[in-house]
Structure formats: C-alpha cells, structure tokens
Image (cartoon, rainbow, N blue to C red; front, side):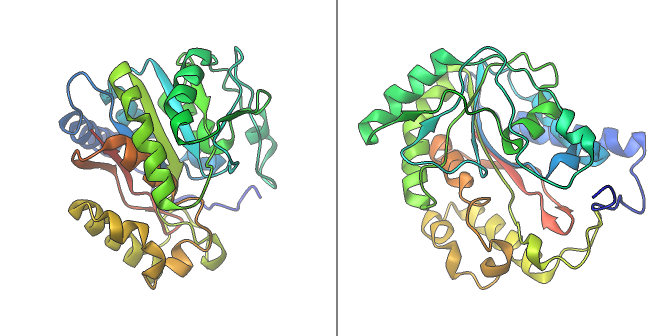
Length: 288
C-alpha cells in the first residue's frame, strides 16, 4: 500500500506552512480559557498523517498554542468496550498497530509515553457514579491515540491514558464527557479522536488533495452549523441527515465528538483545523 495515499499535486512551501501554523495558533489561543484545559476532538487520519506536511504543521501549531497538559485522556474511535475501560497505566505505554497493508515503517513507530495511574484513579472515581468501570492493563494505545500524539507531543513526555468507547449512543457519551469535565481544571487534556467524515468505502480516489464528494462536504457543513448553534439534539440525531449514510457508514469515528462536547460544557467551539484529506473532512474542534 505504498502508493495508497497519493501525495498532493502541489506541496505547500515553508511560507505557506508558516502562515497556516500562525492561523491555527491564533484560533487556539483565542479559544482557550485561562486556567483551564480545553477539550478537543480531532481527526486522526491514518498512519500516513505523519508524512502530510500540512497536517503536521496544523497539529504542531495546535499543540504549541495549548497550555502544556499535565496528562492526556484519549477516547479513540478504535476501541469499543463496555463498560468504560481503562487501558494500560504502566511506564512506557505500549502501542497497538491496528491497521494492515501499510509500509513496514509504520509498524516501527515508537511512542513511549509515561503511563498515568493517578489519572486512571481519577477517571474511575468520576465515572463510577454512572456505573461500573473496568480495566485492561495490557491494552496499549491504538493508532487513533498515538498517531496525532506523535505529531503534537513528539517527545512522548506527557502521561497518556486511553479510555474505551463504552457505547455508540451520543447521549451516553455526552454524559460520560460531562462526568470527566472536572479533569480540565487539573490540566488534563480530554481528547476525542475520530474523523468528521469517514466514508472510506465510498471514495473513488485516494489522493490526499482529492476534491471532497458531495456527501462529505454536505455533512461537514451540516456539522459546522449544528456546532455553531450548539444544537445537541440535532447532532445526536445525525443519522437523520441524508449524507450521514455515506459520511459515517459506521458511527465510531463521529461519536467521540460527544465525549469532547460533554467535557467542554457550554463554552464556545473553536475550529483550529478544517478542510479535507482524501476528500474526507478534517474538521477538528476545541471547546474551552
């Protein structure tokens, strides 16, 4: 699959990348409340994300503009387990190479982030009023967690904990995110990781700068408007949007958004990253 994702016809030059980074940083700083970490939802793409110059510039700028987190709690599209389950908390959290057919170099990625046992205890105490919380001590970070972190915090010096998606129901995930909201006051970055449109089976070409199909751009525009209105009923009922059947043939890459929205509360939504990759929406948000 070496040529599975064809590079853009025109690669941004250094000046363009610097301008993009400056724009992202200004959006992030304006959308960050003093003394509190925002909650974020980002598109994690695929392992080749780390080779995409534009996306790297955007993610690096986002991380630099954020307050430095004490720890990171990730809810990724790639781990569904009920009840909510805590992953590995050991020193040097292991990785899961949960993809196939890519060049060998992507299976040699290393991200030896410190474990976060104290954060795991906090998460358990916050979630137990909602029901049981499980642990899977050998479960490492999947690519929905470590791929963006390789770019955002490449020194792997921030403790990371992964928490499973216990349900695909938006309201349950919103409730879970709300329970986790106090972590933000203690410097914890709550991160939902998915992709704003994820209709891979319906793509006709795999060029990174491909024009978005109508279903991708239509769903992206609908989400942007619903977020601007904070229309939680509408967002939770996303299956009623005609383009959703193509944008999200499965729910897993969309619903981490609700963990972020729950953790974010009623604060303003900022959009540090938008646009498309493979014709899929990269829209990524933070709620302060």
